[in-house]
View 1 (cartoon, rainbow, N blue to C red):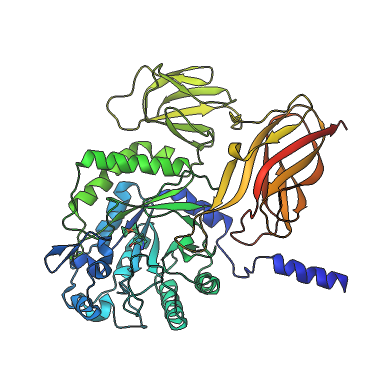
View 2: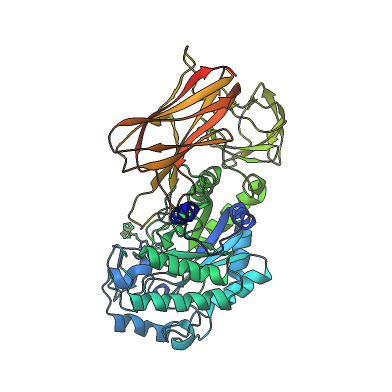
Length: 552
Ligand code: H79
């Protein structure tokens, strides 16, 4: 009897996540790709940001129907002139490859509700209502398959043609009928276009059950298809940052940063003021490197014209990033994030025994410093270029190699990478180590309830130095909690649990835990496992202390 009720209680804590999700290998593969092409293509492309002679700038051009208050019937009538004969899937895949991109995501349906694929749920599609009469999702999916390019689709959860009222926030609730319509379309997308590497849900304000319904529909048909966080309610397989956003917080979950060439629009805008090419290329290389050094994928968008052709400027930007990638791609694909908190010269990635250093600024004394790196440096040189001299754990530069933008140093080190964080907390004279929230690495869920909900704090993590071997108890001072909750205290590879009670400022004790001397042990506080997807720390940490209790 007792064990039955225990199991029942346990089942309440377990994530209700029966559906199979992408495997570790899939997630790793997805994360290794790093750079992808987003394509915003649809009925809106025919307008290029202009309606009845007026240029609309109140919103992105793919949302001109909303921005210009175009009556539904007038907007829908554009389909009869939509004839993208210049849509060349082969050429687009080649452009992506030339840019160094490893995956493509195409808008199967944007908020306007116009379908770029063959759907049986409505006639409002490129196949049924345009002179072109072909399936654009299919042609691109097939071309991607031929060239070993990963392929995914964007799918707007809201749909103005279905009857959602356009408003700038695109935060509409989803009716039951609309939910069923979406599910039927998702089944088509997940059945008729081969394996999809990801599905990019966007916007709307789905309930928790609706998000789960959409996610289960995807994973029942394709368990390995990665779902974007904008399915909301923590049902995504990867976090999606805000549009054109590179977060300053860190996360250890898979994530992606969607970017447009000009942040004003994703869909084609004929009158976009296009700035000099070199600066634009450099801007996107730098953004890509920032994202990758923090462990994310960079999804850079093009907005083809209504005739299906790619804007020359967009193609040139992509090829410009591709020229850089050709030389420096080894420092991007398959790498792990920067193991240093901050570098004064630029950014870093890691791959096996190589540390790749992206030099944005040449420090005044010419030294590339790697704070806290304990490994012996075997050799260093410009990636695909000249050797460089090493002094202790810094690289000494006499200048930059030519006028190359963001040149990369390839540094080979010995052994397993060990970086002593600059902020590792040391014990006081009583052997007590006090950890404060202002020194913590904060890990966030970027995968929360809705677009306008801020990322939630999932875990706080510190690095400590242990000088004396022995038993330590862990004291957590906290405030503003709710009821009682279990927390996981992870110290190195040891997990201990404790319960925090009440909502007043209070203390809880966990442990003791046996610790050996070490220059660097990670300590973290997280919601008690097994935790729901998206579980957050629902209290505020005042401090965490490791208190020495004596030797063995
Ligand atoms: O497909 C692209 C956008 O159309 C879609 N997401 C990307 C990938 C999107 N739909 N809604 N939103 C994003 C919400 C964003 C709304 C705003 Fe704004 C962005 C409000 C303020 C900044 C757009 C630009 C409206 C005003 C300025």
